[in-house]
Image (tube, rainbow, N blue to C red; front, top):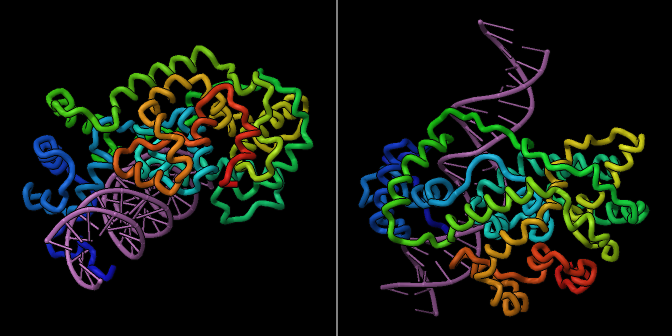
Length: 339
DNA sequence: AAACTACTCAACCGCTAGACC
DNA sequence: TGGTCTAGCGGTTGAGTAGTT
């Protein structure tokens, strides 16, 4: 607010971080813990502004961050949460504790937005706007089209997991080398007596389990539940329609339909259906906040603040809807004050 | 092989809310 | 009470890389 940027000072280094700088920063945080960022540059001798140190830590060096390919489960989570929350990347990231908001934002802008655009184009080329950035923008049309589709004839054979959907990160610069970072952090992870605030190690274990589950059980309860998830409310975010629509799209194509969009385009998104198989992971992730959900559902504006404080968001109706297997989707949508 | 284009993602910028003095 | 500072957020940029011609 009228204040000059912290990085305007002469001698403040910008640009990619070097391994040496990372080591210095990690060592310092190992000793003092994260926080009090203002003192970090002076105490460490780093020629970086405090903001840069904080960002480097939170977006890259912080333990428990998962880098690389997004799983279909994560992809589905992002799509759904973006449809529900908008571009609240920090809020979305709070549901994916191993991912940073920056990562999610990038992934959305570079991958998922395109997929949704293609979906839009497939749905109705006339509706496609060049700057459409949210999946909720084609809700009504999607809903309208969907209601004209056969809702009763789901064909699970068209559904499959695509574990190779994501791009391969072959960046060779230091900043993109996860090996460097893991080596850097290895000692700290072992030696640090402080438990990770976001229980990231636990998440890693549980998600690995979940992935294993996904691999061995691709048929999801979404599909088998015969519960069309967005039948009643025309204001249900389009990403949700997107998932359901694809069942029919794929079916139509299988039955000799058009070639508007290939199956592969949607595989990873479609595999969000495996979310329900991953409910164990979800619940383990969110158990710590379950008991707060009712309060915060009544006061949604507090959600963000809570996230700021402990990275553990409340489980309001939408989270429950996302996480619980046997929830009545239609009813919850109708009850939603958001739509 | 070189030039060009498209893509990715780490890092930066500008801004706001809230804490602190 | 008002000014300052910090932490955090979302949007944007640009260097590096991959793919294409």
